[in-house]
Image (cartoon, rainbow, N blue to C red):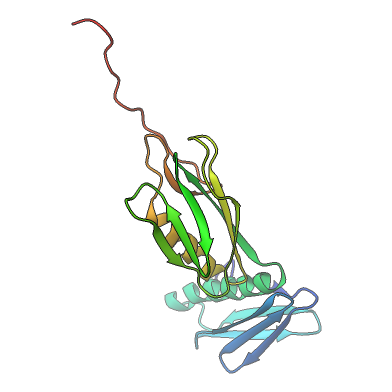
Length: 193
């Protein structure tokens, strides 16, 4: 039995969870999300207690155990997304690096001979706090926010993949809470020989 799977999901005020066959629909103040559940997992909505229960009929089956916790986590993320939303903060380090928003695109100048453009997916909002870096110490900062945690995480990973932080000076795109392990560069002998 999955420890995460057997926890119930609390439904906050203003959020409605509907179940039609295998399709779960969650509607809240920030929007709505839908997902198809797996056949092996049973979803029950207890409206009197405002809870969603995820049940596994075959606790000995390995795939059912894996799906039990996964389905519960996905539904919990949907409920949190439509009630509070998710956000991911990113930073860009490196002299002269910057980011700007042009229409539905993010345009990055990050040390290549050309600007890198990424189309912002529907459902993701971008807010740029500091568009350009100032030296190597003050990074450019921007925040991605969405109700869909999977879409948000994938888009943030796609942005970071453009130029991951390098280990010597730390230049590149990183998450705001990410720690970059730094390496010591070459030591030059001064003077004699």
